[in-house]
Amino acid sequence: MRRIVTSILPPEAEGRLLTEYLASRFTYHSEDEWRLLLMEGCLLINGVKPTPDYHIIAGDVLEYFPESRPEPEVSLDIGILFEDDRFLALNKPPNLPCHPAGIFFDHTLWACLKEGRIPALAPMEEIHFVNRLDRETSGVVLVAKNADAASWASRQLRRPDAGKTYRVLVEGEFPLEGVDAAGFIGRDLDSSIQKRRCFSREMLPDGQTARTTFRRLAFRNGISLLEAVLFTGRTHQIRATLRSLGYPVVGDKLYGVDESLYLRFIDGALTDEDKRRLRLPAQALHAYSLRFADYDFTAPPPSTWDELCEAAPGPAVG
Image (cartoon, rainbow, N blue to C red; front, side):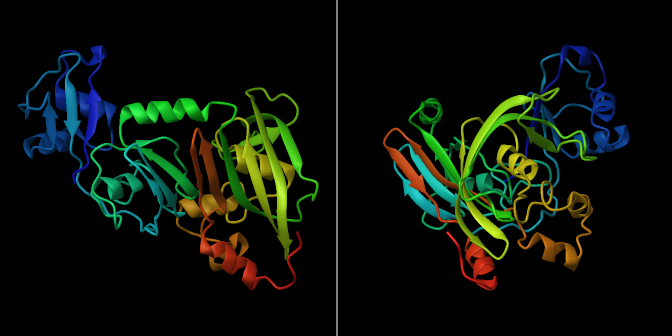
């Protein structure tokens, strides 16, 4: 399967030399490099190989076929929870992207489904993710087999009687009585990392309303197992809220015990001591259940969670 990047060329590109426009818009290649790619057949305009002196017409459909690149290793321990003629429910492992993005293409859940690389499943022509999880987040992923099923499921999930619950491991002894975290999610102005967010019960300058409830299920050797229920769907809501409450998610590089871990992670420079502090190779956030209409799916957390708890001395406390 070949990666294809499709783009509709805008009105402001009208009349420009294609290779010159691409070099100015997508600077990872020079104009000479774009011209070479064009001659090698890596570029199509409206399904046809253009000439090297092609000038753009607004609305042209550009297809770019980038060369394959090595991709990081991922986990393919994918569990099948349910299948009928409309839906497929899977238990996604941590460290597996749902869909192609950035360097990931072949090493994605989408590619595995498209090519039939999951045992007992045939290749899928249509893939519609009803819910999507971050690469490091594990748990229930619902795939619709056609657009109508995807639209119906999305509507059902917005109903008050639908529900999503998560399981999460956090550092520290979380309050036994639980926490109803209602407030706002916004940019973390105290962080040097642009995309990091924070939770506050007070209004934030760019804040969005957010509410998550947390219930402690167990506590052992400084780690609490929580159930989290989302009432809103903000970016990084669970992780940002827990960090702001003082209970960072185990294994979380961005919202964990030290944000410098994230900076070293993106540089590929995590040390053995960093990995020890993280405890797990991926953030311990798991989409545990998904319920809507007559469907109810539950996925057990990764076995690494049990291994971590078993390695921790001392009795568990409910």
